[in-house]
Length: 252
Ligand SMILES: O=C(O)CCC(=O)C(=O)O
Ligand SMILES: [Fe+2]
Image 1 (cartoon, rainbow, N blue to C red):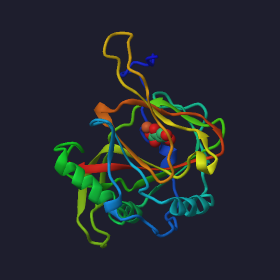
Image 2: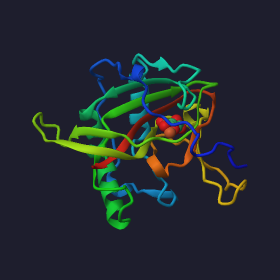
Image 3: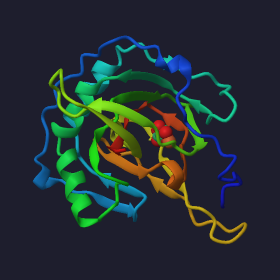
């Protein structure tokens, strides 16, 4: 069934001001062990819209992160969202951490795979890719929690491309959402799939939803901004769903 929400009126996920308040640092565990990039690849789920990378993080690393992230001061989102914002009911934590974003980008196979893909699929990322959004979000969904249907906005960001202190600041824009799943059925999480709703081709007739099942260590990338597909994080019915969220950034 096609969703009844019209694109213009569907909510977005523009950051709200309360989320800007954050402690200064997180002790992220080291990004090891990892598989070599030669063992990994980008899979197309919906051409130019949804891509996945299985096992970017092996399950051992995901488990270490869940243990570590469990001690963060996660905040449950309010049940009644502000006007125009998607209803999301989950526990979350947000931090601007350029160093971690850079590690997640260059210290894993992500950068290599994304740049390789750009060479094969010209223009796919919407510009010259410069790295990941330093704004890192951690989500935990417990039974009954979900992220209602919405579109993700593109945001302007500025960040250093190198970890050196006086590195040049680059003006960038987010073009694709990055979700890294740390849990799935094997960890006891039931539900929580990320589901996309392709736009109706004819009035009243929509295509079948695209259901992306959770997979431990898998990255899901989807185009956002003007060409974002309507999507949701389905309700979790058992266990916990843990996700790390960032975005692919291009030069502006
Ligand atoms: O948790 C999910 O599956 C979806 C998250 C999402 O849509 C978002 O962060 O904008
Ligand atoms: Fe989203």
